[in-house]
Image (cartoon, rainbow, N blue to C red; front, side, top):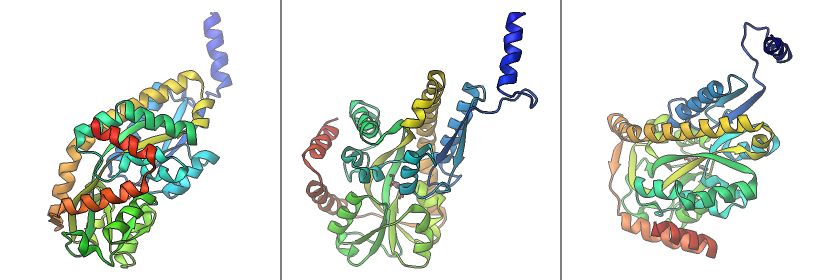
Length: 323
Ligand code: 2Q2
């Protein structure tokens, strides 16, 4: 009887009059730049569902695709000021005095999917995650595999020499600016949500991204050629404001950790099947795929990386390549 009494009190305290459905004690806002077709979105929704289930509704995650919470760089600030709580990011962290974070997207550093898993999921990945947490207060809760980045444009490009004068959109990542400058293009940083319109209006001539974003953002409608440069095989982080994480009671922190692990595994599975499908889709839409002189791209990019990197970054890159 005492138990029942306490239970009834607990119900009253949490305001449980709406048909037995608890109002969440905490609501977390989760933003990303991809659209609702993209694997990132599917994985985010999986996370939200797992969180709800595992917390019995005490914790709710609201997912905002398409930079609805703001451009990537702004949402990073949002995590610190509390207008967002969770986001998907990666190499853009370089701008947050996080030199080690750029190793998640360094040109020609990762050989293939298997290498990526060993790096991102191993001790070097842990070192990068710890760095992001300690220096910036962004808590990596999961990492996502991504397809290799490829250059798109409205003319075929086989060699870096053909990049002269090309205005190329890159994310706000200084290493990308350095690399594409060295390759001969005119890189211009821009938020992802602006890329389609900028291509349509020809204020930029090209961009570079994995198949998934080329497809889901409809870039194939405004770009005819996809150059198989595969210049960056990267991974992304789902990061949470550490301040927000730490105000959660331990049991809800555990819910976050467990749901994040489920989300990560789910994304990795999705990615495997999705990449081939995305390639086929782009082919069916009439995109032409161009083989490039990869060695020429690699050489120029490596030189740019070596010039841009400090001793610690070079050391970490060497350790990554030894895995
Ligand atoms: O082109 C983009 O904006 C994305 O593919 C980027 O890789 C992403 O936004 C990174 O800047 C992640 O930090």
